[in-house]
Length: 288
Image (cartoon, rainbow, N blue to C red; front, side):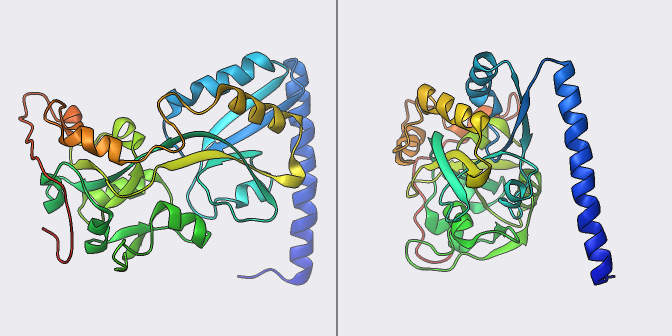
């Protein structure tokens, strides 16, 4: 069912009225708590514990403002900025949107490939991006093409297409498809720590650049609170040990070094033997 032109006009008028009323109530609530404003931040990364230093520093330095955090859905990621639902988005570049500003970087991480425990890749210690070309991957709709391309490339280094078929809107959807063996999934490395799963193995990817995450906001909506958060991030700098130029090969080499226990063994059930295989995945055709 579609609204008539009169219905659409009424909807738009009522939306403005509702937003104005909600803002008035919010101002009254904040005033009762001695607050003068609220900064709403939406996050794609899930390493919330590691990012606490930015949020706690902001709250300590600017007690007059309230800081609210939420996890971002995948689809149409920049709509939440444009429709006023949030003030700042933490995401990866590129952000090739003329109305948006890309701010300072919080961290950058190597990439990992999540595969089902019974996937042939699970026997290896590391993976190559070529592996993705042999398996289905997730996709998001709608989404800016260039932005999602940085997360899941459309082709492998050898120009083979990466089939992106399973439509998801959050990390739990992605992990479900992965655990069921329907897809393999590329992630930043911290997902292995924050989302261990008995049926999923994480493999360091040796030939992808680190994925950076930074602040993004709508340029016209920039205010003192947004500038203050950006200043906090710049002053604290990227997370320690997460240099923005870091490459995934560092983690990959550690994973195959016999002096280190493979990362995927960290979350195996107690008393379950860990299978250590020295080697690296290199794909030129079908999966090994």
